[in-house]
Length: 202
Image (cartoon, rainbow, N blue to C red):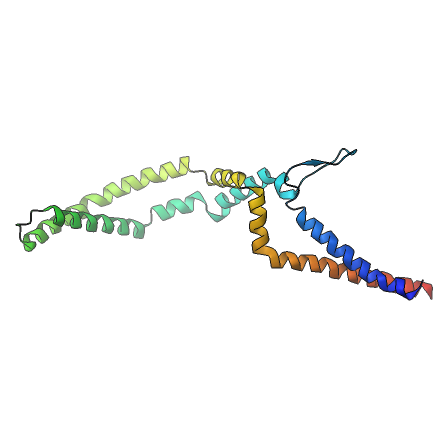
Protein backbone atom coordinates (compact mmCIF):
# COMPACT_ATOMS: atom_id res chain seq x y z
CA UNK A 1 0.00 0.00 0.00
CA UNK A 2 1.45 3.44 -0.94
CA UNK A 3 2.62 5.55 1.98
CA UNK A 4 0.32 8.42 1.03
CA UNK A 5 -2.67 6.13 1.58
CA UNK A 6 -1.29 5.14 4.98
CA UNK A 7 -0.90 8.80 5.87
CA UNK A 8 -4.53 9.48 4.99
CA UNK A 9 -5.77 6.90 7.52
CA UNK A 10 -5.17 9.12 10.59
CA UNK A 11 -6.64 12.14 8.76
CA UNK A 12 -9.74 10.23 7.69
CA UNK A 13 -10.09 8.72 11.17
CA UNK A 14 -9.83 12.17 12.74
CA UNK A 15 -12.50 13.61 10.43
CA UNK A 16 -14.81 10.66 11.04
CA UNK A 17 -14.35 10.92 14.82
CA UNK A 18 -14.97 14.66 14.81
CA UNK A 19 -18.06 14.44 12.57
CA UNK A 20 -19.45 11.55 14.63
CA UNK A 21 -19.22 13.53 17.85
CA UNK A 22 -20.69 16.66 16.23
CA UNK A 23 -23.68 14.64 15.01
CA UNK A 24 -24.07 12.90 18.39
CA UNK A 25 -24.12 16.25 20.25
CA UNK A 26 -26.61 17.73 17.78
CA UNK A 27 -28.85 14.68 18.14
CA UNK A 28 -29.21 15.37 21.85
CA UNK A 29 -31.65 18.12 20.82
CA UNK A 30 -32.47 17.66 17.16
CA UNK A 31 -34.76 17.05 15.50
CA UNK A 32 -37.16 18.63 17.97
CA UNK A 33 -40.16 16.82 16.50
CA UNK A 34 -40.31 13.18 15.35
CA UNK A 35 -39.16 12.70 11.75
CA UNK A 36 -40.00 9.51 9.88
CA UNK A 37 -37.25 8.12 7.66
CA UNK A 38 -38.65 7.51 4.14
CA UNK A 39 -39.09 3.84 3.15
CA UNK A 40 -37.98 2.68 6.62
CA UNK A 41 -39.98 1.97 9.79
CA UNK A 42 -37.74 4.34 11.73
CA UNK A 43 -38.62 7.61 13.45
CA UNK A 44 -35.81 9.95 14.45
CA UNK A 45 -36.05 12.51 17.24
CA UNK A 46 -33.57 14.24 19.53
CA UNK A 47 -32.81 12.46 22.79
CA UNK A 48 -33.97 15.25 25.10
CA UNK A 49 -37.20 16.07 23.22
CA UNK A 50 -38.07 12.37 22.98
CA UNK A 51 -37.54 11.64 26.67
CA UNK A 52 -38.50 15.05 27.99
CA UNK A 53 -41.31 13.71 30.20
CA UNK A 54 -39.12 10.98 31.71
CA UNK A 55 -36.29 13.44 32.34
CA UNK A 56 -38.68 15.95 33.91
CA UNK A 57 -40.05 13.28 36.25
CA UNK A 58 -36.56 12.08 37.21
CA UNK A 59 -35.28 15.62 37.85
CA UNK A 60 -38.38 16.49 39.89
CA UNK A 61 -37.98 13.37 42.01
CA UNK A 62 -34.28 14.08 42.57
CA UNK A 63 -35.00 17.66 43.62
CA UNK A 64 -37.74 16.61 46.06
CA UNK A 65 -35.91 13.65 47.58
CA UNK A 66 -32.27 14.73 47.50
CA UNK A 67 -31.79 18.44 46.79
CA UNK A 68 -34.79 20.06 48.47
CA UNK A 69 -36.63 17.51 50.65
CA UNK A 70 -39.92 18.56 52.22
CA UNK A 71 -38.71 17.72 55.74
CA UNK A 72 -35.78 20.11 55.36
CA UNK A 73 -38.15 22.90 54.33
CA UNK A 74 -40.37 22.18 57.30
CA UNK A 75 -37.39 22.23 59.67
CA UNK A 76 -36.35 25.61 58.30
CA UNK A 77 -39.90 26.88 58.65
CA UNK A 78 -39.94 25.97 62.33
CA UNK A 79 -36.42 27.11 63.15
CA UNK A 80 -36.26 29.20 66.32
CA UNK A 81 -34.08 31.86 64.70
CA UNK A 82 -36.67 32.34 61.94
CA UNK A 83 -39.46 32.71 64.50
CA UNK A 84 -37.45 35.20 66.51
CA UNK A 85 -36.84 37.31 63.42
CA UNK A 86 -40.54 37.22 62.52
CA UNK A 87 -41.54 38.24 66.04
CA UNK A 88 -39.06 41.09 66.05
CA UNK A 89 -40.30 42.37 62.70
CA UNK A 90 -43.94 42.26 63.87
CA UNK A 91 -43.18 44.04 67.13
CA UNK A 92 -41.14 46.76 65.43
CA UNK A 93 -43.83 47.28 62.79
CA UNK A 94 -46.66 47.48 65.34
CA UNK A 95 -44.69 49.88 67.57
CA UNK A 96 -43.88 52.13 64.60
CA UNK A 97 -47.49 52.22 63.41
CA UNK A 98 -48.76 52.85 66.95
CA UNK A 99 -46.49 55.87 67.41
CA UNK A 100 -47.79 57.26 64.12
CA UNK A 101 -51.45 56.74 65.06
CA UNK A 102 -51.33 58.10 68.61
CA UNK A 103 -52.55 61.71 68.97
CA UNK A 104 -49.90 64.34 68.38
CA UNK A 105 -50.60 66.10 71.71
CA UNK A 106 -49.34 63.09 73.66
CA UNK A 107 -45.74 63.54 74.84
CA UNK A 108 -43.13 61.25 73.35
CA UNK A 109 -42.39 59.77 76.76
CA UNK A 110 -46.01 58.64 77.12
CA UNK A 111 -46.01 57.28 73.60
CA UNK A 112 -42.88 55.32 74.48
CA UNK A 113 -44.54 53.86 77.58
CA UNK A 114 -47.65 52.81 75.64
CA UNK A 115 -45.55 51.33 72.83
CA UNK A 116 -43.40 49.47 75.35
CA UNK A 117 -46.45 47.98 77.07
CA UNK A 118 -47.87 46.90 73.74
CA UNK A 119 -44.56 45.38 72.72
CA UNK A 120 -44.36 43.44 75.98
CA UNK A 121 -47.89 42.17 75.44
CA UNK A 122 -47.07 41.13 71.91
CA UNK A 123 -43.95 39.36 73.19
CA UNK A 124 -46.17 37.23 75.41
CA UNK A 125 -49.09 36.61 73.04
CA UNK A 126 -47.37 36.23 69.68
CA UNK A 127 -45.05 33.22 70.32
CA UNK A 128 -47.83 30.68 71.00
CA UNK A 129 -49.88 32.11 68.14
CA UNK A 130 -46.89 31.91 65.83
CA UNK A 131 -46.22 28.33 66.96
CA UNK A 132 -49.79 27.42 66.09
CA UNK A 133 -49.57 29.09 62.70
CA UNK A 134 -46.24 27.40 62.04
CA UNK A 135 -47.67 23.98 62.83
CA UNK A 136 -50.61 24.62 60.51
CA UNK A 137 -48.23 25.78 57.79
CA UNK A 138 -46.09 22.67 58.28
CA UNK A 139 -49.08 20.39 57.82
CA UNK A 140 -50.14 22.25 54.71
CA UNK A 141 -46.62 22.06 53.30
CA UNK A 142 -46.32 18.37 54.15
CA UNK A 143 -49.66 17.42 52.57
CA UNK A 144 -50.05 19.99 49.82
CA UNK A 145 -46.61 20.87 48.48
CA UNK A 146 -45.28 18.50 45.83
CA UNK A 147 -41.95 19.86 44.63
CA UNK A 148 -41.44 17.04 42.14
CA UNK A 149 -44.73 17.89 40.43
CA UNK A 150 -43.86 21.60 40.30
CA UNK A 151 -40.44 20.89 38.79
CA UNK A 152 -41.97 18.42 36.33
CA UNK A 153 -44.55 20.97 35.17
CA UNK A 154 -41.95 23.72 34.78
CA UNK A 155 -39.65 21.52 32.70
CA UNK A 156 -42.53 20.30 30.53
CA UNK A 157 -43.46 23.92 29.81
CA UNK A 158 -39.86 24.72 28.88
CA UNK A 159 -39.37 25.15 25.13
CA UNK A 160 -36.87 22.62 23.75
CA UNK A 161 -35.31 25.17 21.39
CA UNK A 162 -34.79 27.57 24.29
CA UNK A 163 -33.36 24.75 26.41
CA UNK A 164 -30.96 23.85 23.61
CA UNK A 165 -29.78 27.44 23.26
CA UNK A 166 -29.33 27.69 27.03
CA UNK A 167 -27.30 24.47 27.30
CA UNK A 168 -25.16 25.34 24.27
CA UNK A 169 -24.45 28.84 25.56
CA UNK A 170 -23.38 27.48 28.96
CA UNK A 171 -21.47 24.42 27.74
CA UNK A 172 -20.16 25.67 24.41
CA UNK A 173 -16.50 25.22 25.38
CA UNK A 174 -17.08 21.72 26.80
CA UNK A 175 -19.05 20.66 23.74
CA UNK A 176 -16.20 21.88 21.52
CA UNK A 177 -13.80 19.81 23.59
CA UNK A 178 -15.96 16.73 23.01
CA UNK A 179 -15.96 17.38 19.28
CA UNK A 180 -12.17 17.77 19.16
CA UNK A 181 -11.77 14.75 21.43
CA UNK A 182 -13.66 12.67 18.86
CA UNK A 183 -11.31 13.94 16.18
CA UNK A 184 -8.24 13.16 18.30
CA UNK A 185 -9.43 9.63 19.07
CA UNK A 186 -10.22 9.05 15.40
CA UNK A 187 -6.75 10.29 14.46
CA UNK A 188 -5.12 7.93 16.98
CA UNK A 189 -7.19 5.00 15.72
CA UNK A 190 -6.11 5.86 12.18
CA UNK A 191 -2.47 5.86 13.29
CA UNK A 192 -2.92 2.45 14.89
CA UNK A 193 -4.54 1.10 11.72
CA UNK A 194 -1.73 2.46 9.57
CA UNK A 195 0.86 0.97 11.93
CA UNK A 196 -0.86 -2.43 11.77
CA UNK A 197 -0.92 -2.30 7.97
CA UNK A 198 2.82 -1.42 7.81
CA UNK A 199 3.73 -4.20 10.27
CA UNK A 200 1.58 -6.74 8.42
CA UNK A 201 3.14 -5.78 5.06
CA UNK A 202 6.65 -6.62 6.28
